[in-house]
Image (tube, rainbow, N blue to C red; front, side, top):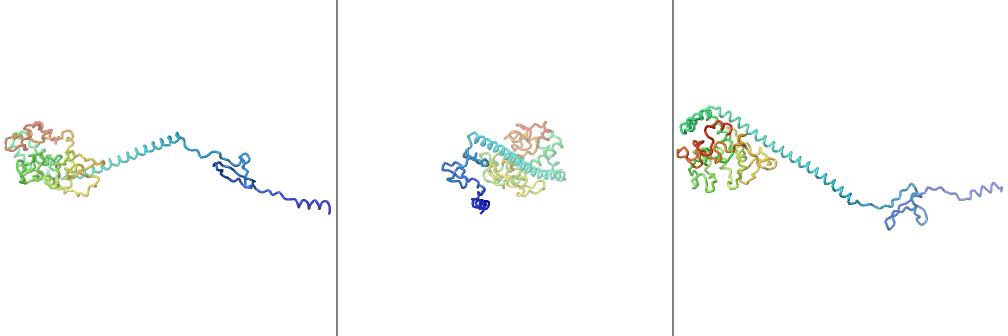
Length: 345
């Protein structure tokens, strides 16, 4: 065997060095929770440092908690966001309530406008004009005060009185010009109570009695099961407007169906048995027959609500506080200022 052949055999018998790819280090956890890297296949699990394997990042830090300052900053940011959201929501709700109120007022306005148009047709009818002439003639004969007033002024006042009867603003206007339920000074229903009881509450069963000058809405109020003891004067203009629109025929216009209004538009806020129109916040709306009522809420009869001096027969005709006593005493508007009544109502 030659030397070259022996060298070849020897070379074949040498163990080859396999260039095996080293498996990546495996992550283990010590009992203390620290991260350790063990080289796969190394004896006794020799740890591999990051400097030995620059491609492996070793975390020696545990999970850090938030500091007190960081928590306070987060809480402050959340509080600010909540406050901003609350303001936006409150503003949205307020606008929604305003829109609901405007919708209710617009609906009521349309209904009143229909009745005002009907009134214009009514006062131009021959029957109304004939009644006006008859009433003016009677007034001028019955009272010295009315003689000084022109017929044109009295006609305007009678038209305003017709509208007042159709849309009373206060309960006292439901009693008619004599200021009493039914016929003043009469026990119309025979229950032993004349006009008012000991607490000055009206005898409801006398409202709209035959022969009285009570407007038609008086009968509606009598049948409405009104609980006088629970009544709040703040709500009465809204209550009377609701009755006028939904329970009474006004100048030939039939009453509206009660279902026309939603439950969010009406409520009995004072618990007296009469519904009122309410706004988006649940407060009763107030009805003013004429804008000047905002400044002169008592109108012609003054603060005592009675013609002339309350409780006095000023014109000595046997009837106390009747229409012919207007301007003859008390805090009524003087007759020389009758022109102002055309706008004061």
